[in-house]
Image 1 (tube, rainbow over the protein chains, first blue to last red):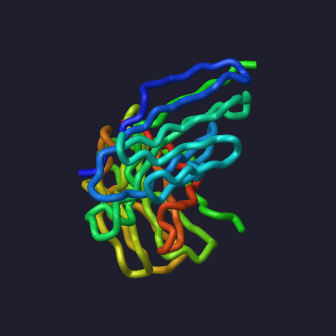
Image 2 (cartoon, rainbow over the protein chains, first blue to last red; image 1 turned 90 degrees about the vertical axis):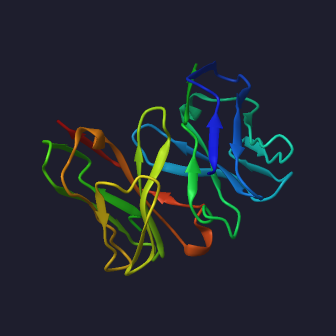
Length: 116
Length: 113
């Protein structure tokens, strides 16, 4: 079945550092890919998405590019802030016609802590 | 709009007890779902519903029941609680055509002793 693998955390950075959180996936066909963020004590929120190969999703300074050849969707931000401290989840929704179409499969989450 | 609301926020149960986690949304979303979040395992889908009167099983449905009598409400029932059900439970909703853009509730932290 479909699966998502994220880099192991936690990740600790200083403010203004560059962030990369790796995400790779296994799925048949062409799934849609997402990053969700969970701030302390809250539910998850959609951060960005990409629905086809080579698409770049972006929001709040975060970016991720859908790479079909490497089955990856790495999250990047050029300069992190303390307020970016959260748990980040990579997720996919299966391609139309597949058994996981319309369902979200999540990675295990990566805890990011940003220090001033 | 209140969005997605969940009650209670915290709950402690003894093994064998039953209870219902409540979930409601006021966005007229057709699609609703329940996830459990465990350390190092991300979120796993328990049950979901594509509309009133229609429910289906997700990845980890055993030990849980759901029903969807109205568009707004999607309660999750634990029939006989077990320590393995200790987890944080999230309810989410979305429009049917945008299932990837799910709105999550704040969660219920459940401990089973």
